[in-house]
Image (tube, rainbow, N blue to C red; front, side):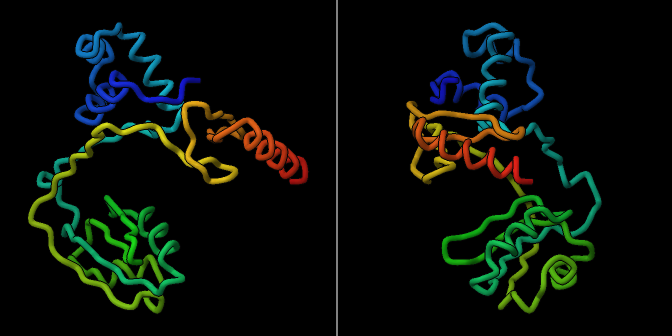
Length: 197
């Protein structure tokens, strides 16, 4: 499987980000490919893990479901990853970020705007040193690909996977490796664990 993104892949991704329901024939007209060729490329991008899912972009101004808040949490250092993971998967949370300085920042729809109750229902507040909640007046989200390159980390050694890398499907998941040696080591250990389970 090709593991590089070319300009056509990036343009297809840009068009899908604008409108994930855009017909492949329409995308094909814009990038100079047939609809089936676009479908093949999108399937390849999904297999690579670049496209994980197609989602709906909702106009929140037309829905009543709570107060939009930007919440910045300052967890205890040992709890940052856990707090981020928990809040990222919580109902009402639209975006969650873990920052380099150990904060967790999220946008969320919070019933009655009560950030404390919202957080307390999802994480242990004893592990949060403090938080700030700021009401949102408006929101926009516009992911930009720029000149993005496909560069996952090797599942075995952590090095960046280049075009000479290897991709393997194991247990329904895609794993990327920087070389055949790492792929073999990882696959062997995976199978041993699978047999032992």
